Image 1 (cartoon, helix red, strand yellow):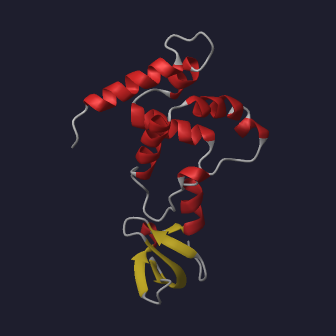
Image 2: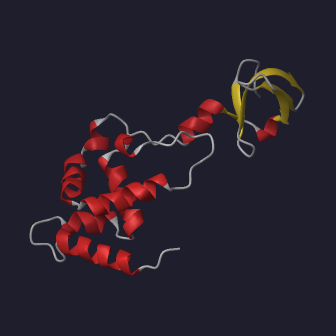
Image 3: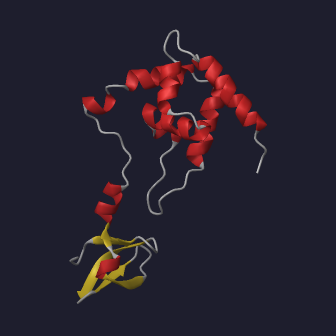
Length: 156
């Protein structure tokens, strides 16, 4: 159960507030704008738990970064127009209400590569494999085929 002073969220309504009182199953909150609202306790979650569940920051440990050099190398070989496709896809991605969107610059190399992959419909593994020496298709040819396919799509 929540206690006075807890910061809680009603996810469905995207309402955040500090618990000021509880009365059985009803929790009363004060929003940052001073407005007081109440919800059934079952409709609320702790704000810290909500943010932790949707956290996309990359851990600082070595295991989380062991393949960064590979991802960096792939990104360095991508054409600016392919990167732009990833940036556009990232910017237009559906966001979880109440979770701050991260800028392109704040993404890790793998997160950027994932955005490029989603925007181009080319798996991350294909981008990595194509960037290896002697790969078939080579990364340049793969990019040209992606750009050609993107050029054939009709605008919505």
